Length: 67
Image 1 (cartoon, rainbow, N blue to C red):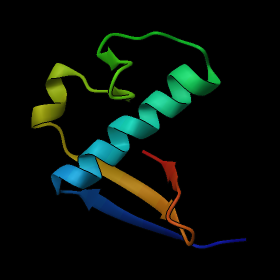
Image 2: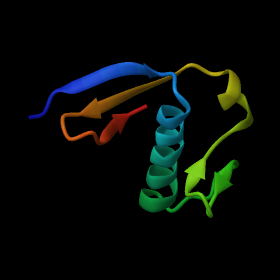
Image 3: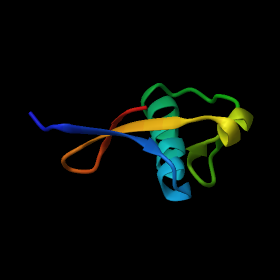
Image 4: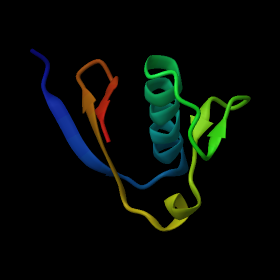
């Protein structure tokens, strides 16, 4: 079992990774089209994201495990 690193996503790149994770989960796995979906960029970004605190968990391989 790999270990997880939990941290706040503060950089724009980290936040974009979370938006891409949402897209992969909601669109790719659940086949849902939710508000804020950008199919061209393959992200889901909502208006309140600008003011939210985002936290992410990543595995040893760098794959995001949870948000």
